[in-house]
Amino acid sequence: MPEPGYFHLHLVSDATGETLITVARAAAAQYANVHPVEHLYPMVRSKKQLDHALAEITEAPGLVLYTLLEEDLIALLETKCRELGLPCMSVLGPILRVFQSYLGAETIHRAGAQHVLNAEYFQRIDALNYTMFHDDGQHVEGLEQADVVLIGVSRTSKTPTSIYLANRGVKTANVPLVPGVPLPPQVEKLARPLVIGLYASAERIVQIRENRLLGLKAHRDDSQYIDKTAVAEEVAFSRRLCAKNNWPSIDVTRRSIEETAAAVMKLLSERRRHTVG
Image (spheres, one colour):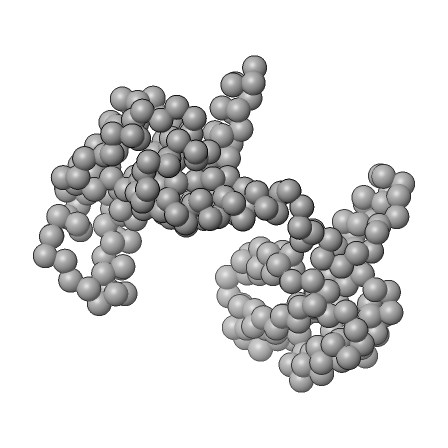
């Protein structure tokens, strides 16, 4: 049994390990009282590389998850885990079996096949480059090339949501709404991009801003930045602006970045369907 409070989580992959990390963290998040100590072994494609992982697993026993496709390596890993009495599971194995059963075809057994340099990959890179170049109201003259433009007051998660969407191939720009600073006129004239407002409760924004100032050990002479009444007016202005321009808006008060991005993707998909129709 793991010691109280934490457990070792060994992730053995023949590629980058991104799939393992995502699945493992999604599962671990369901357990509030224990936390994984992650040990990642990427690009394991030889016995020598696997032996290194096995040595660490023996040194710090724990749960073992893997995405290996070479049967010899799988056999070595599972045999060692049985000897140590450790749970060991393929993350892709059960899914691949379902695919095989339904499609009636064997897998290609190519390590890291999901990372192939195809058109989708380059679309993501292009979107990331665009998003970083158009972060926080920069280069507004290029906003017409965006798929999505996010607007909102400070601390409504515009930048992280933009980056998350760019990782999905969505060219995303974001423009801050700053008290006393006019919105760039280009924004209200945009035709191609879907403009979406992000807002949160004044209480939540004040809390985030206060924590940010504490974390940065910063001081602002502008007390309005964390004044609840002033922040409430910022949020109200944001919502009036969206209503005036018929822009959809999303309440991010209790949403994670992933949930906000999913809501944006849904709005974008609906708009595209409507445009095509």
